[in-house]
Length: 449
Image 1 (tube, rainbow, N blue to C red):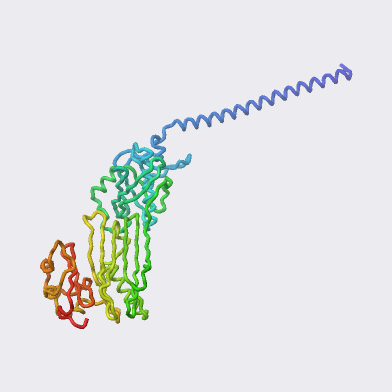
Image 2: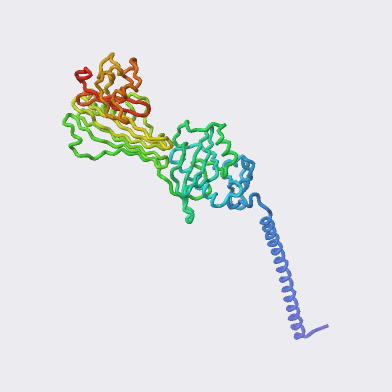
């Protein structure tokens, strides 16, 4: 059958329209399938997230404080610091000692206090050169008026230390101030270390409120928001005095020097004023000054030396009185007053040192009184007078109470005598009291001094 040109044209148009419609239907169908697949995938992800969020996590009640839970040494459930990064694997059990462990029911404020104390101890490790790692057990915080106190056990390798931190807190600004604490570990004195069977050790291990490993390199979880007392400061100061008090009129001059060692954190305050000699002979000058430093930083004839950094919670003040200065001898009395926190009373005493200015040698008492003469016979000669009166006591009453022995060597008093312009002084002790006794050379039968 034949069709004319008009009919063929109409047929082609209709066929194109139908094909176009069919293409549109196919496209919409394909797009619809893709959207459905995407919607199914998104729904699956959402459902998975919701399910994970709804599943109970270990330690969820204390998550804001510690991150995860762990059984403490006392059998109680406690929080341990964990990572807050999503999906991070929890550290293995053997690493748990490095985590912070909080007792159950610890408030955010209490946790903050323990975190600040931990940071404060770590700062001390840096200041005082503590290189080892320690496990810190914190006891309950006690309050006395506006001040808070906390007992702490620091456990290291073969070391156990009892510490006590004290602080005040500005609650409005959550700011802490640490002062007056007791941290024996920084002295390095093993006398203060605890034994394994000490009841304090057992109590803190079993009943701690917070526990964390501390070392200089430990990454503790909190930021610092506290003030603290300063660490050690050591100074040697040339004291300014009028020239007329320095000039002796002899071949040397005497100038006072002040040594300071202060550590607010460990409550150490040491002030020592001592003389320094200037001579034209440099070798002799150094020898004389070394002898004086030995005497002031403990007795010249004693093995006992002053180690300032070990004098925790102690005040020491030393000064001197020149008792004789001439071309032959330079002699001083050294006075000390000291007090250590916790002792029942302060202490005070005097010692002496005498230097031969021709040789730089330190004199022994026997060099002055002669060989074969005892201190007992010297003091019982009746020539001495006391410079200090205890409750009206007479000189002879004091001497009678000294329990002097005839065979006691004069060397026992080598750090406890001094010279005056025309006599001898001997520093004597009875219990914690001391007395300076002086006599003239001529009354003692001593010549040539």
